[in-house]
Length: 456
Length: 48
Image 1 (spheres, helix red, strand yellow):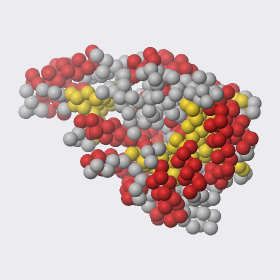
Image 2 (cartoon, chains in turn yellow, cyan; image 1 turned 90 degrees about the vertical axis):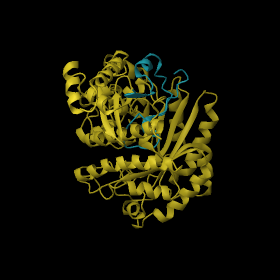
Image 3 (cartoon, one colour; image 1 turned 180 degrees about the vertical axis):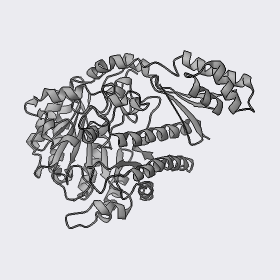
Image 4 (tube, rainbow over the protein chains, first blue to last red; image 1 turned 135 degrees about the vertical axis):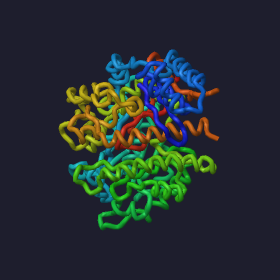
């Protein structure tokens, strides 16, 4: 399967199954387009008509070079992965290597667009006790097989509303990781309200990554991210985030924003984050119900697609100015990126990744928490709902019918099971709006990577 | 004349032979939390 597109002055050709990427001239671009559809003679003839200034010998030369790429399986490589997809996913299943710990089902902000319904996940307010958290960490170690790197995300609600337990759990994990030959990598996802010097010191010492929620422009952020009295939180949290990031050195962090119907022009929010001195950025489309006023409309999506292209241009400009920044969804490591197992298996929800509620229930991921149909079991008795687990285990990119003919399948691995479920009622469906945005992001990310390799 | 520049990429077919160590980051864990994509994940295999 081949996908070709023009962006940023480049003619880009992706060979999906080999993972090869080629940048070609106009004539070669047209030859590749017709290569599998026409005879050589007819194709060379029609391309010659489109480019009367180009000598036919040169067109033939292009044709030969395309043929050579095909012969060496760098173009039109056959899809050899489908028959082994189930087996490949099985190889990465059967162990749990990441937990999202819901240490607080409560929040000090009252953001209307929250997929977790203000942190409560459609249930009662609750915080995780140290005992439950400790058992969750033991459960993770017991079920992690030979995996060395284990990930734990302190999530909520607002995890800093249960900061003492977070600290105790990290201390506990550090005390047992060596004897079990494990390496815990912690992430903290916070709205920033409770950040103080103690939190900064702890997070910068112990957290491999911190995810800081900021929607960008003050007026945009303060529309949704308000306290229970309705006051915006931007003024309060931005200086705290700046202090934390400044003290963080080279350790990972992301400023993570959500864009909604009010700001499909989210590039302005990215620019605000840059102006505030942040360089590791992520902006995500809102996840919400069909009738939610925050939902992106069809017209919004057109704007968003254009914004993604402009974002790529901004990245290139900032590279040139010596002020580069990272956009989470444009990070792409073409040389050392994920292997085919990962590309087929996806996020691992319900198999290698699970969410734990404050009282120890297990769900396939944080986005399913609160929907009892998806209750997998608990950290005391393990996974008891094997039907749901098996459903997620069988969920690979080739198990999704809509993904079969999609060029992006090995870049997205079938997408988010929760988004698919909410859009179609099945975890093996696809969330079509999400697909459209994802494909544009990949086209842009690859273009930026090409520019970084070949551009002046 | 150079008509095609090929970007150096990981060969996915080869990765079927020795991939799958599972040490890489869980895709959703790092920043997004509301979508999935694996292209931006780093490979952590010691045996690429």
